[in-house]
Length: 330
Image (cartoon, rainbow, N blue to C red; front, side, top):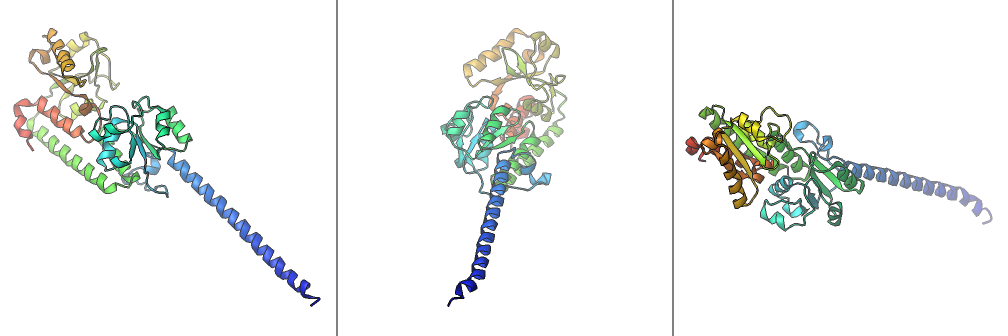
């Protein structure tokens, strides 16, 4: 009995070593797990629409190892449209001012215009992710959101190709890949149909001036989305020599351009749009005015790159080639 403490000592020593080993292992595992979680959080709060969240066509498939976003704030009207089109409307907690499509989006909290969103309003909604436009939402605000651990998806949507990529990217990040594929395929087929009909018409290079704003007088240049609609419709942009998306012009310059057709981006008020169109009547020497080819269109439809952009292209084709209107019946 007197030697039992000596016999127990090695056992106690081994037990202590095992406990210490397990404790160290646990601490190392916890540290590793926390580091991994921190890395994932940093990935999420980075630019999710960039390389790590590129579409599969781009060859990058990685996705954070956590649940898909459950609370989204849209920071641009066309982004709101895309989120609803992807069946993610129930996940949208807030939206940009002027997000008028679909109508149910207007019932959501307004976080401010796309170029001046309110950080306070966004934070109050406690979103997982904000979806922004890379050339619209101020970068300092996006940095603040990332610093607060809120994920940011930045999209570039300045063309139909960009629009396709944006839908695929959102579908991938939000777990709506199948829906995104269906939407982009439908858009592609409609575009192909319209383009083939344009080729059959032999358009003849109609000159089009697209008025964005009256005072100061701003038009759509070729790099703007409206400018690309003109090109896809087989027409010539009267402001084609300008490299900026929205050049400001004087009326002397407009006279020299001599556009065949003038398109006015409507402001939403029927009376205001009518007055804007009537003001062109004082310049009868401009071919478009002389021939009565001054048209007012829905500004949202023609200037927001969304799935409705195909509707805008079809409407533009009908305006430009009214003699062949019946050829565009579905």
